[in-house]
Image 1 (cartoon, rainbow, N blue to C red):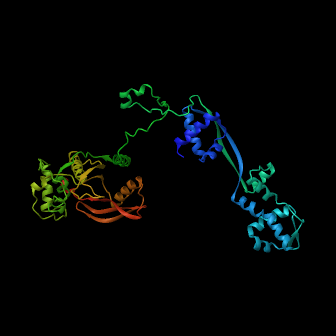
Image 2 (image 1 turned 60 degrees about the vertical axis):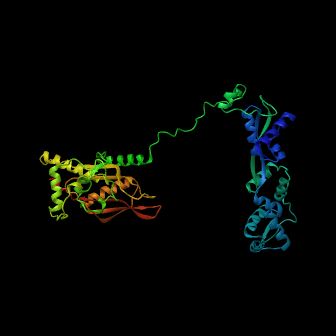
Image 3 (image 1 turned 30 degrees about the vertical axis):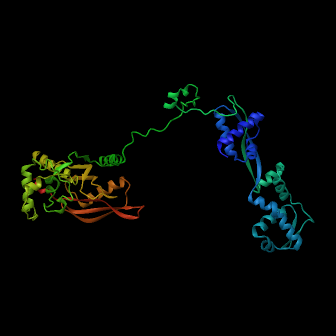
Length: 446
């Protein structure tokens, strides 16, 4: 039965007899659940079609064990009947015939009632006949005959019966009672305004105390949220953020200053986004450019160089930066210039950047042409690989990655270099999460 049909039956019933004494009994008579009945009544009560007064009814129901006892008798009665029929009996015989649980429970209760007595190592009847009051009480309860207070306590204590309570309602006509409920209008609409039906319509009351739908605006975008958290951690470690607003970079700072050879495959158009207009950078530090060019062509400071002609047009090509290390190179050059101007009064520095980089990648579920790179550098005297590992470990532990491995690797502009792997507890495997190393492109700065 649907709610509309049930509502009509409830209103008709009230029209005939003024009230419904018991919603539970009424629901049973109509063949619906009490929950459905209460739902319809409460809906009518909200619109003041009915009034409702709650009452609570308590009663006992048999448990599964109580149901079994009402059929087969109580354990103590079954033990007594077995001993009476067999004669002197051992505990082992009773356990074999009746089961350990029944024999154990029944023996204790039968001895307490003095239905049995012990004779040497056996048990014999202590009375000629018994009345199984427990089973009788349970059978009467099934017939809706209420037990006495003592019987009720005994049955619930032995978990043969359990108390249940029911909240039912007495329903009477309300202030706005009618044989049929008028449908209320939720809000004005264009149709009711046009035909004028809003003038006679009954509107639903507004609940001005309702909280309303939660506001969904103003949330931080997930990527920016992660970026802000990384920035907070790195600043807490003493790092200062580098300016990273230069997305278009020259090949000189993106590749050449990092001693990546001009013939390297990463500099091809299928790996890098080159800018059509303006195609070439206009300027760079001339003296530094010459020192980098010499290092590429001839080497120096123990390096043989790349032994190839350094093409200035190739170095001048503009591109979308492929890594934020181009920013690191610019910042280290600026630090070197400041050191020269201050005649060697070098100040140790810790810098970081978090920003976009661009690669000409084939897009799939794990690759995009644009992603964010987190980079940090430390410039100081007497630094070792141990300092690098400790710094990396501190950062990753602060973002929740505690299991790390470091693997030797090759980078064109760091030596020694290490790949960083973190253990993924859900995937249950080690995943590469970073790269690192010690810069060796610093010699041309001085």
